[in-house]
Length: 452
Ligand SMILES: Cc1cc2nc3c(=O)[nH]c(=O)nc-3n(C[C@H](O)[C@H](O)[C@H](O)COP(=O)(O)OP(=O)(O)OC[C@H]3O[C@@H](n4cnc5c(N)ncnc54)[C@H](O)[C@@H]3O)c2cc1C
Image (cartoon, rainbow, N blue to C red; front, side):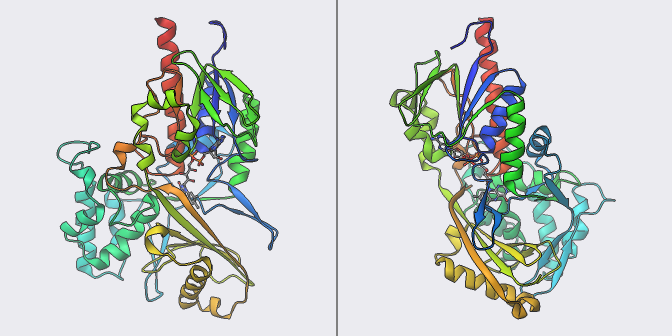
């Protein structure tokens, strides 16, 4: 505990992007910060792992962002990794018959018209379907008549799939245009993703500005950014980083700080705690009195996870010159290629497949061989399937009601995590924003108690 003249102490539990963003913000704003992370590296879900067979590090999944992810870009710049993501303006769509269609926003047209030529160039859809998409996008992009869709409103209860069908979108346009747009961003199929969440993705990620839809692809391994660069910068700012330090329990009385309990029973006292762990872990970490004092937490256990599977294939040669591609009408939705190493992503895999890793690998491999002749001739050196059952939370209708704000009624306890109320889906951007929001709320608490 600190005296009134000393800066307050903050324990941050969880070193994913939410915890890292909170630590950066808190340390830059003069708080004394200790970060506790149960694994040996920082980054949480956005991390890298070693593949013993190839002797290469690979990422937990290809983590891409969009040009509109201002919070993430700002965070990277502040940890000295401003070049972590490479912007790509042009997307490459591979139609079901294997033909390629490039999609790029026009620089000379104001938003949202800058997307018009790109959509009209998607000739695997009929002219009527393309015009219907343009009309649908304009309509969806408009704010709902009653203003922002409130949690619990009629809008919040609908899926984007229902809305699209009611607004003249054909099955083919949904399968080959709308699904690819939404499934990766929301971690859900259009028949399970909420309408307001889909609108947010469309408005912020596509319609809002010319660079909003740029695809940001990591230039290097996630661990280089979210472990190496982040720990270096946080250490410079005086943050104490405890790795391999699982917090067992958070205890404490209302308004007078908290103790965090480590597995060996050690108790460490702090003025404030920011809990930046995944939503499934919150209940077990909080002592019963803290849990019961936070009604907003009662819904979090009903937040459902979403699966992302990534199929890694190492061929003895490159099979495409494209760095990435959207695969339409297939099980694999996105391809990322670096030389002969291909990564194929299946988002919302919990809805789409129940097959074992071998079957997934063989289906994805078959799809690639159908598209690229080089994949038929190349020798497969190694394959690995990474299945992450709780990669994201599912943006289903009604989920907004279950997402708590970062400030809790107990003035010294705060939350961060992509699953808290950020207005964003389960993404790096959402995580970073939540960390910042948590520190904003914490500082409001500090100033209000000092002025009282
Ligand atoms: C395969 C995959 C692909 C993805 N693709 C994308 C993408 O393309 N774009 C995108 O924006 N997002 C993507 N995501 C989602 C993104 O990774 C997450 O939204 C984001 O990283 C969540 O950050 P977080 O800090 O909220 O949670 P986490 O990263 O889960 O961090 C929580 C941390 O808390 C730690 N922790 C838990 N319990 C304790 C404890 N008791 N004591 C101490 N520490 C504890 C955990 O070890 C973890 O490090 C993907 C995720 C996965 C898994």
